[in-house]
Amino acid sequence: MVTVGYTLMTEQSGPKELVDYAVRAEEAGFDLAVISDHYYPWLDSQGHAPYAWSVLGAAAHATSRIELMSFVTCPIRRYHPAVVAQKASTVALLADGRFTLGLGAGENLNEHVVGDWPHVQQRHDMFEEALQIIRPLLDGDTVTYSGDHFEVPEAYLWDRPERPVPMAVAVSGPSSCELAGEYADAVIAVEPKPELLELFDRAGGAGKPRYGQLPICYGPDEAECRKIVHDQFRWTGLGWKVNAELPGPDSFASATQFVREEDVAQLVPCGPDIEQHVEAFKKYADAGFTHLALVQVGGQGQEMFLDWARDQLLPRLREL
Image (cartoon, rainbow, N blue to C red):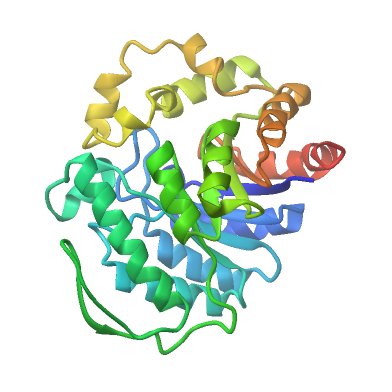
C-alpha cells in the first residue's frame, strides 16, 4: 500500500495556516506531510512564501504521529550544506525522529536572491559536494572538507537524533539518479516515470523508499476548480528544465500567458469525481512509488479538502 501524504504548500498559504493544516492532516489520517521550501511563489496569485524551516519546527511541535519532510531544500546557494545538516537534525529532534530531509538542485526562482544562478553543470557539481558534506554530518562524523565550491574547515553536529536523519534526493534523469543511488536513503520524483526508479535501483537504490507528488484540485464545482488550477498552477506543464531557470513570478506569468484552462486540466484532476483523483494516484502506485504526497491546489478550501480526504479519499486509496 502506498503511504499517502499531504503537501504544505508554502506558496499558497501563510505560516500559521500551514501549521494548522499539518495538524488537520494528521487528524484526517494522512501519514506524511511534505513542505515546499521557496523564497518566491511561482505566480503572484499564489501570494505566499514563508520560511519553510520555521513552519517545520512548529509543525513538529504541534503534531505527534505524522511524518514530516522537506520537499525539497536546495543546499547550494541560499543555504550552506553544513547549515542544512544542522537544521535537519534539529527538526528531527523536535519531531522525535519523524523527519526526512528531501534535497534537490534548486530553482533560480528561489536561489538567485543571494547571488547569481550557476549553470546547470556547475549546479550539479555543487549539489554533489553538498551531499558529500551533509551525509557524514547527519551520520555523526566530524567533517573537514575542501572542494571546488564549498569549504568546511571543521563541522560537527552536537544535537542529533539517535537514528540519523534519512536523506532523500530529487531526480529527473540519469545523473541525478546516480547521485541519489550513491548518497540517499530515498528518491523523490514528481512524475510517474518508472524509468527513473529503475535508474535509481541500478545506482544502488533498490529497496529504498520512492516519494512522489500529485497535484489535484478537489471541490464541488469542476469548472471552478479548473479556474483555480489555471490561475495558480498553470506553470506545472512547463517542465523542470524551464521551471528551474525562470527568475521570478513575472517570468512565470509571461511563460504561461498562452496556456489554456483546458491544457492545465489535462494535467491536474479537477472537481468532485473521486475516481478521477484515484486514477491519477494509481499511475504513481503502478510506477512503483511507495509514498505519494497530494497537493490540493489553491490556498482556499484546504479544510474542505482535508475533511473530504478523511471521509472519502483516504479510505478509497487504501483499498488499492
